[in-house]
Image (cartoon, rainbow, N blue to C red):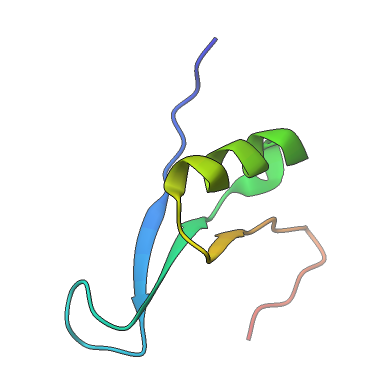
Length: 61
């Protein structure tokens, strides 16, 4: 069964689209296996790719 996963293309250190340092980001990666995260990163073909896994005890400032 295929799942829908949102992958964001983020442009850091700029105020213009498609400038600066690009990265792929998955915000809700806690439901993904390590192999799935690796596959998504490989598909994105970007040297910077982040999968965020939030926990109940996490404090974000």
